[in-house]
Amino acid sequence: MENEKIYCGKVNETLLEKEITINGWVRKIRKLGSLIFMEVYDLTGFVQVVVEQNNQYFATLSNLPKESVVEVKGVLKIRKSINANEKTGKFEIILSSCKIYSKSELPPFLIQNDTDGLEDLRLKYRFLDLRRPIMQQNLINRSKIINLFRAFLIAHDFIEIETPYLSKPTPEGARDYLVPTRSKKFFALPQSPQIYKQLLMIAGMNKYFQLARCFRDEDLRADRQPEFTQLDIETSFLSESEIQTMVEKMFAYIFNKFFNINLATPFIKMDYQVAIENYGSDKPDVRFDNKIVNVTQYFQNSNFKIFQKTCEQNNRISAIFIKESVSKNNIKNLEKIATDNKAKGLAYLTIENYQAKDGSIINVMEKEIINKICSDFDYQNGTLFFVADKKEISLQAMGAIRKEFLSFSTSIKLNQKFAFLWIVNWPLFEYSEEENRYVSAHHPFTMPSIKSINDFDTNPKEALAQAYDLVLNGYEIGGGSIRIYDADLQNRMFKFLGLSNEEIDKKFGFFINAFKYGVPPHGGIAFGLERVLMIMLNTNNIRDVIAFPKNSKGIDLLFNAPSSTSDDALEELGIKMVD
View (tube, rainbow, N blue to C red):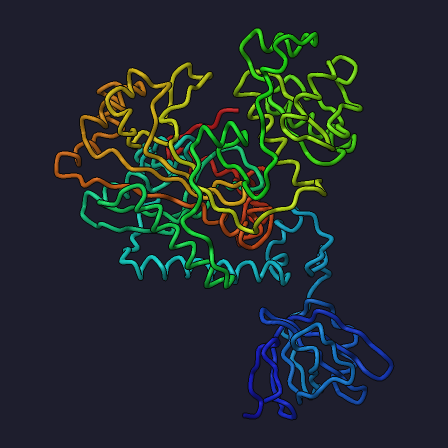
C-alpha cells in the first residue's frame, strides 16, 4: 500500500522500497555536508530520516528544533551504516515531503533515559518526562500487568464493582481528606473501600474486586503517595488459607505471563514474632540471610557498663554481622539510621579470624566475650554491630540497619529475584504511646484468632488476629484478614477501642444495622498496586509507575496543587480560613 501511515518503531523489511508516512517528534538532527540526518520517534520507537540537499525542505529542517512534531513521507531504504543495537537501526527513510505540525522550544532537561533533570523539575514538566522511553515503557507495562490481574480474577468468577469516592471517614490509620459541601457538612475521600466491600458480601456478591483509588493524608516516602491504586479483593465463605492459595495462584499467573517465570508455590509463611526477632521488621527481605541475634546473655557479667546496665534493666542487646569490612562513611550512615529509629547509638567491631581487631568498643569490651559470640555464631571475618536498648527499639533499629546493608554490600548475594512471604499470626492490637491505649493493628473489623476470641478485650497484649500480610522483596505489598461477621462481637471490638454506644451509632450505625440481616463469613485482601509495579519493573520510586504523581511533599508541581480558592467559594461552603 502506497503512502501507508506507519508507527516509527514498526518499520520492517516488508515496507522496503515503498513510500510510507510516519508521524512523531524530532529526537536528533545532524547536518553532515549535503545531508541532514533526522531521528523521528513516537511511543513505539524511532526511525532515521535522510534529507538530501536538493530537497525543498532542506533549509527549513536544518534549523528545526528538537522535539518539534512532524509528518514525514518518503521511501524506506536499508541504511548504509546499520545500528545493530536498535530494532529499527537498519532502516532509513529518504525524505520526499514533510509537514511541520508544531515547533518546540528548548526543553528544560534532556528527554532521554539518562536525563539531567532533577525529579521536581521533571514533575513540573511531567508531559516531557513521560516522553522518555523508560517512563513510557513503565506506563505500557503498568497497563499490561493491570489487565493480567483483571483477566485472572474475572476468569475465577470475581465481579468488578466500583464503590464511591465520596463517603464517610473510616478508621484506616491515616488522616482523611475531607470534601466540604454547600450543606455545611463533609464527605471524606476513602482511605480504602473496606466497609463497602464488606457490605457487598452482605449483599451476596460472593467474589468482588476493584481497582480502587484510595486517599490518605500521611507522611510520604519513596513507596507512598497521597492517592494510590489498590487492587481490592473480598470473598465470602473462604478460609484464610483458601484466600492465600487464591492469591498465590494469581501472582503465579501474573509472573508467568509477564516474565515467563514460574513462581514457587505455596509461598513461605512466617509468624509475625519470628519476623520481628530474626529480621527486626514485619516485612523482611528474605532474599539474604544476615539475621539479627540476641546476645544479651553474653554480657550479664560484662565490665562494659552500657551493656551491663542494659542486662540489668531487662532490655536487649541485638547484634548483626556482615561478612565484609564496612567503611567509615557507611558506618556513619548506619549510626544515623540507628538513632533515627530511636536507638541511643550503634556500636561495632571489626572481626578477623573470629576475634575483635578494631571498632568503636574495642578498648572497653572484654575480648573473650566477643570471641565467644563469634565462635558460637560462626562470625569469622567481617563487621559486627550492636544495639543495646529496649527490645522493640533494639530490633527496629537493627531491622533498618539490615535493610541498609543492601545499599553498599559487596558480600551479600541475593538468593532469588522475587521472594514472596506471608506474615501471619499478627497481634490484634498495638499499644499507642501517644493515645495511651490499645488501637487496632489492622482495622477494627478484623476477626480475632480462635484462641483470642473470648478474651481479646481482657487480654489485649496477647490477642492475635486472623490477619495476613504479603511481603515481596522487603516491601509489604498487601494486607488482609478474615472479618468479624457477628454483631455482638463487632460491638465488643468497638467498645474495647473506646467508642461509646453513641459514637458507634454515629460512625457505624448503618454498618451494624446491616448485621441484622444475615452476614456470611468473609475475608479479603488489598494490594498497593503501584508498590507491586515498582518492584516488578525494577525501580525504587513509586512515582516512576504513576502517570501524574505528587512529589515527596505531596505537591502536584505540574498543576501547582493544592492551591487556594476564592473567598466566595469558601463563604458558600461555610468555611473560614485561619492562619
